[in-house]
Every structure is written in structure tokens, then in C-alpha cells.
Amino acid sequence: MSGFLALLRRDLMLAVREGAALGTALGFYLVVVAMLPLGLGPDLKLLSRIAPGVLWIALLLAALLSLPRMFEADHEDGSLEVMATAPLPLELAVAAKALAHWISTGIPLALMAPVLGLMLNLELSLTPVLVATMLAGTPAVSFLGSIGAALTLKARRGGLLLALLVLPLYVPTLIFGISTIGFASVGQDGFSASLLVLMAVSVASIALAPVAAAAALRLQVS
Amino acid sequence: MQTLTQRLANPTRFMAFSRAILPWLAAASVLLIAYAMYLVFFVAPPDYQQGETVKIMYIHVPSAWLALGGYAIIAMSSFGLLVFRHPLADVSAKAAAPIGAAFTLAALITGSLWGKPMWGTYWVWDARLTSVLMLFFLYLGLIALRSSLEDEALASKLTAVLALVGVSVLPIIKFSVDWWNTLHQPSTGFTSTVDASMRTPLLISAAGFLLLFIALHLKAMQNEIMRRRVKAMRVAEVERGDRLMSAGAE
Image (cartoon, rainbow over all chains, first blue to last red; front, side, top):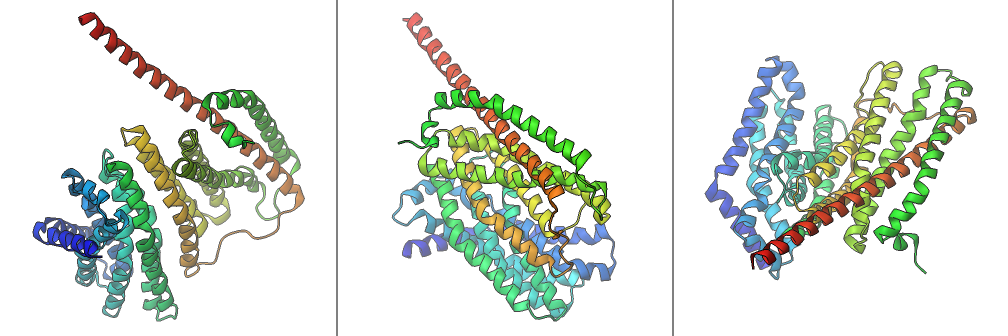
């Protein structure tokens, strides 16, 4: 367990000290959301109706942008091979890195969403729900993303390929994220059930994705 | 006592076996599809609601089945590669991917052509359509991942990992879209039981397409084995050339 925590701390410190990666993701999020009213016209009614979907999709794209870095640097300087041979199972090492990705990218993106929601005229009463779905759903984004990052480690044009591989995996997260907000906006029951399913998707990804990602990494570093 | 898959693990034996049965498979598939098309166009009645357009079904439904069947073959082959290291498993997985993708695309295209007269639109974000589209993306991902890696042995294993991840995700996609859409619109699926006059041609057509799939798959596997042999021979030739060069230099 200490190895897990050490790795988590190391990755978080790297994320904080580099800083640029998080800044890029947040900037990308802002730019995509700001482009949308330019493309669709400034009709506030329309914008408030599509705001949850726009915010979720832009969040997925922004998170996607930071995924290729998850194993790349460690692969380049050889520390990935050390992790593969360390006493800590590689599955747990992957989980630590994915968790670090969630804390350093997923949470900041989710916390930035309310500000962007204001720009899109999202109903204020929906803002807490939006953030709740994002906090519940982004673990799945990071953990499923680790599979894609591991698979494309040695691939040519890895970043583009990563999007193709990972976006289908994000479909359940996106659908339940949006449907939870949809339930909440009409004040229907089923809101909490939908949020629970979203959490279940995240928990399942946390449990299963490191196995697949570690298998993919082992094939490449041995 | 060896099972069939064990005996066919030897590529040479597989080549002989597949060469022997391939012509029969291809002929049977052509005959069945031709017979099914005869039944479809001259015997089967037009649907009382949908008229003649129902005939798209006889291509659409088998394509959709084979879209899923193709993925099942890839998933089983991937499992066979990663767990049993069966020598032909990767050949099978690689050969099945473009064929499965083609049938998925056929199901999507015929479906949308059928959707226009029936639902008034080429595309609906309905549960079944969306999950088939995601299946198509999964196929594209498998093909793209394989082609983006230089090292063939590595490419085959990584693709197998992705194929197995896809297995766990496909049902989730299917059902999540189901749950999602029950919010917005009722299911557009047709649930009426199918009469024998239409079921028989459908089954014959499906059998013909199934044989077509197997024949294409076997042929693609043969091509892949040949390609690997040619590659191995080239490598051997280059190595021999190197040896001759170094021998001449001495």
C-alpha cells in the first residue's frame, strides 16, 4: 500500500509542478465551450437547453487530451519498466496513476464546469447536479482512459488513435451523466437511481480497467 | 484425442483443410443466397404494413447477426491467443475484423435505407442503432490499433486486449442506450411475431450469409498465412544474402 501511495504522491507532485498539462486541459475546455455559442448563435434558451450535453462532451474531450501523457513520460525515462518489475503489482501502479490523473485533471475540470455553465445560461439549480454527475463520472473517464493510454503507448499517431479507442468506452458514462441531469431538470424521481448507475460505471471501471491496462503495458515493457 | 481446433493449429494442415472445403462453402453460400433471393422476390408476400420495403429485412437482419457474430469470433480468437497461444488465433482475429466491420456497415446502411420509408428518417438515435454504430467504431478501433504498430506480434496481442475490453463494454453500451432512450421516446423495435412465409426465406438467407461469412473468413485467413510466409521467406532471403556478403568479404 505504501508503494501505491508513494506513486500517487509522486504523480500528483509531477502534475502540480509541471502545471502545463492541467492548464492546457482547462484552457481547452474553456475554448471549446466558448466556440459553441459562436457556432450555434447566441440564443440563450437554446444554449441553456444544450448546456449539460455540451459541458459533458467538452469535458470528455479535454480529459482525452491529457491521457496520452499518463504513461508516456515514464516509458521514455524507463521508470515504467521499474514499475513493471517492482513488488507493487502493475495493476495497482496503473490504478495509482489513473487516480492521480483523476485528481489532477478530472476534479479540476468538474469544478470549472459551473463557471462555464454560467456562460451557457445553465439553470443555477442544475449546477450542483452537473458537478455531482461529473465528480461521479470522471473516475470512469480516467480509468477507462488508462486502457487507451496503455494500448497506444507505442502506436504511431497515438493521440488520434486514443480518441477512437476510448470514446466508445465513454458512451455509458456520458449517457448516464446526461440522463441524471435530465431527471433532475424535470424534478422526476429516478435522479438518484441514475446517479447510482453512473457511480456503478465508475466503480466497475476502477476495478477492471487497471487489469486490462496493466496487461497491455506488460506486453510492451518486457 | 485432439479437438478440431487443436488439429488445425498446424498452419499447413489448416491450409489443406480449408482449401478442401472452401469451394463447397462458397458454392453452397451462393446457392442458398440465390434461393433466398428467389423466395424473397417471387414467393414471400409483401408485409401488410410495410409493403415491399420489408424485403430489405432479408439482407439487413442477417448482416446485423453477422456483425455481432464477427465480433464474437474476434473475441474468442483473442481469448485463444492470450490464454492458449493458439498459433492461428491471431490470424483468425485479424481476418475477421474487416469482414465483421463490412457486415456492420451493411447492417447500418440497409437499416437506414429501411428507416427512411418506415420512420421517415435515415437515422434515429434509437438504442439498437446507436449500439450498432458503437460496434462499428469498436471494429475501426481494432483495425486502426493493429495497423498503427510496427511490431506485428505486439500488435496482435494489444489488439486482443482491446477486443476483450470491448466484449465487456458492448452489453453496457447496448443496455445503457436502452435505458437512456426510454426517457425520450418509446422503442421503435418491431415486436410482432413473424409468419412462416417470411421466416423461412429469412432463415435461408441468414444461412447463406453465414456460409458467406465463413468462406470469406477462411479465405482471408489463407491470405494472411500466405502473407506471413512470404514475409518470413523475404527475411530468410535477406539473411542469406548477408551471410553470402560476409563470406565473400573474407
